[in-house]
Amino acid sequence: MGSIESEDSCSTSAFMELAIQEAKNALERLEVPVGCVIVENKKVIASGSNRTNETRNATRHAEMEAIDSLLQQWQQDGLSQSDLAKRFSKCVLYVTCEPCIMCAAALSYVGIKEVYYGCANDKFGGCGSILSLHNTSSEYSNLVEGKGYKCTGGILASEAVSLFQTFYERGNPKAPKPHRTVVQS
Image (cartoon, rainbow, N blue to C red; front, side, top):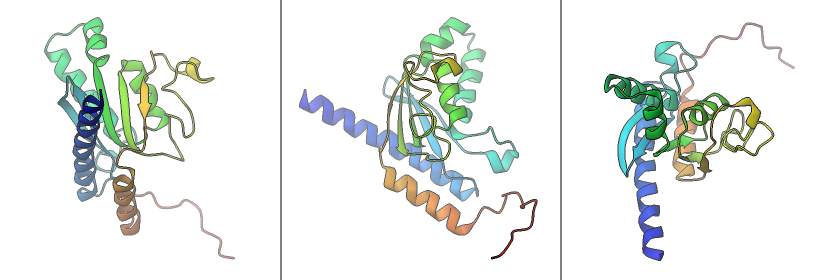
């Protein structure tokens, strides 16, 4: 049993490294550096990174990009709604930052099996930091239509935080300008 655990630990780290690479790609495109991969049967079947600045669409988070690419491919392959649900129920998501409330709800809705994430999302986290939308026994489970999923955080968290620090030190050139004047004390 010990060797299986270490093998799983190695694959978890390897898949999270791929998510980190997706986040680095986002950083190069001046996006908030969040990246993810979706894995089925220990094989990456989709990846995504934030595209909110590029598209000027706040919903284009890494997880949504990956989910949408899978839905598009599987629908082209002729999968029915029940087939889509069966496929997602076998998938594991590796993402560099805890899914936000929107993404956590979407992951529950599509029926993802499990999520591994890097750093916590203390402002918008939907997997325990703010709300626990992954947990069907939480007080907020009535807000989300879905089955819930297992969630594990802290995987390569320091690498994910480092990417955020780099992004915010540079500044976000696409950030909206404040609507009101900042009052200096």
